[in-house]
Length: 404
Image (cartoon, rainbow, N blue to C red; front, top):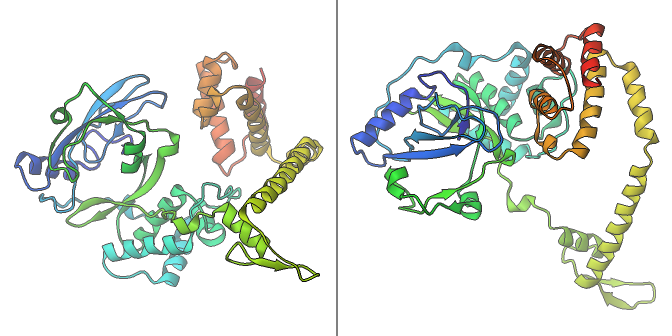
């Protein structure tokens, strides 16, 4: 599902019209569905399922909107008119051009559009690991360049951004997408049955799994995702999922690894000989007890270390003294935000500057006019993301409101 602000006619208008016509003509593998979206506690926006033109359905706080969509299946018979693709879908920023060119020439992706897409996905799966903690991109370093050349690990936004530019290098139009992705497994595991609804009121036509009960499922920040859409002649805008899957081989079983480390053997249950020639076997129960002792000592050590706060304070003051106006403001602001999040659970859900300021004002923790809030928001954004320093007077203005 996309959450996107789109033009009234929709970005996937051609695909939607073709799929809608196929459904009306009762073509094979065609269908129509309806999806109810309730905004529990998110930004107002168009929470658009794929292949829907309901682009004017803004879902505001605590409101519910119905979206009509026409799913696309493998084998769906539909006629798609070719459309003119703008140059913006092939643009590679100057800051990324050299890195993208070197990257592609070294990997030598080749073939049709579909073959190149498959090769890029395979390369990421085999060579660059997925992680939710890739570390921060250094200041003034480009997000994509740092990911491809230095860090070489990341989450969905890294893979999607890089894939979009790589495919553009080969002349394949792309666009970067963000939204929510709900898996079938998640729906069957976490979904709640909707008793007072008829299947035919919400879905008609072909279904790969047959008629099922209607369910309701929560989409949270944990379901937020980024991906790419590539324009393929004859198919329209097609989803490209380049973020690597996490295989079972990538998941480390702690007890097995610890047992192996203790015994010095892959079997995890090896006989060990002491100096007197007496053989004994390290069993799983002993290993688990030993692991608990080791982990307890480690945790106690971490707690003691964390209690010694002098070093962080000294480090903060040292970095603050050397920072410019922008960094000084962001350092102070983040320190202030961190303290608030410890005391206010609801505030932890506020992710960006706009959400944080709105919450602070609404909760009475910050007092300022609407004009001052917009000015403060602009200063914070420039301080955090612009290469140009904010002025000293802007820094003082922002601090005056934050600490008022």
